[in-house]
Image (cartoon, rainbow, N blue to C red; front, side, top):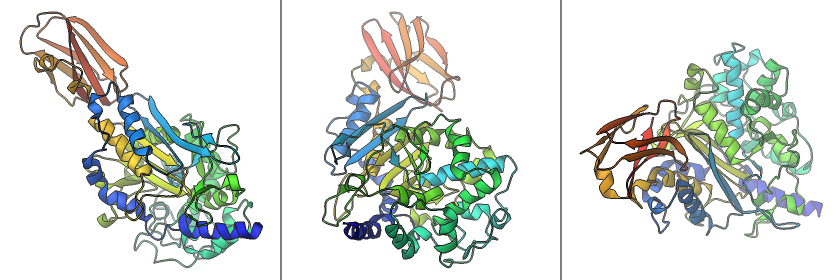
Length: 499
């Protein structure tokens, strides 16, 4: 049985986890190139989102319509709104063996390389404190490692311009060592000393995605702080942000919080199995990923982290700007890569920053500064849709949710359109002050109610009889709102964007 399991794991590793080579995985490259076109095509819901009663209904329907036909075992998603409230929804199963368990929004999954964004952000807080600079050489903080140029800078390892070989994707010996020691908890120094091959190019001359860079970044954090890298992440990010469902696996315990099984076609028969359900431990794999990809979490926790980081609440403005510089400088990849984060060119002109991750579990999460929202989707299945084998996956869910949010507008349904035509609301978008102007004196007193995207009242102004009135919105989070107008029995609504 042991020999059979090892054979299955070799097949599994060759097919999924180590499929990422010098560039980002193929499904992500395809998504980055065609995201704009797929968004423009709209999700075929059969019913316009604007005809629904609430944004929650629109998001639920978009999620369900994409997930209903997919064979992916489990998909979990969250959308964080500007006021801090979160929509979230789950589909599928978290486990099938020994008993079926439905997936919930509380189930933890591996976030894969989104871990890099947490590690980079933690290291950048040390930059803000003056404990190092981005131009410092890594040799200033690390003992020598084979095939690692100590003259490479902090900036170069965080931006993948070091040239260092990727121990995880480019060295078959790493795969073999893991298979031979399934339950072993790996030490990062052991990996750096024995499993990093010769560099792909001289430091600084090109760009090559390498997990080795983030093992080095994690060790630098440890040498500066005197704590494990994940203790530093917890102290500087998780605890202050109240991210109670994010853990460094296998070193930190999640307690009684549920952890979804990971599904993959371990025996290459076309059917995916829950790996933990058939007795395969994730401990060794996640310890090998370490600071490059071992964090586990929920979509809501990741979404809140993205908003705090990319919304400008964690780092100094100059440091965040450095994090969002395009160090890749190659538009053909479909992305702009910064310091442990990237932007999808396919969504321009809609600004966005985030990352994806794939360690059997898959994650896809981005923050949109113009909208002040975060969207994060995770799945517990290593499959992706391809032209040869189409299936809806986490990217399709991500697109459907973004589309539903952008298109949702109750002002075009279930309201008196004539009332809307009697009123001018400006400026819209607005930076804080909103003016409501009637074309003629209203025959009845009008009630003005401002609702956030989830339909909660955030402003209310009663018995308005003037031709013009103003609302001060300067203390509200930027994002999407709806101004409800009620004059007698007539009700209208105007979509308002606060930026």
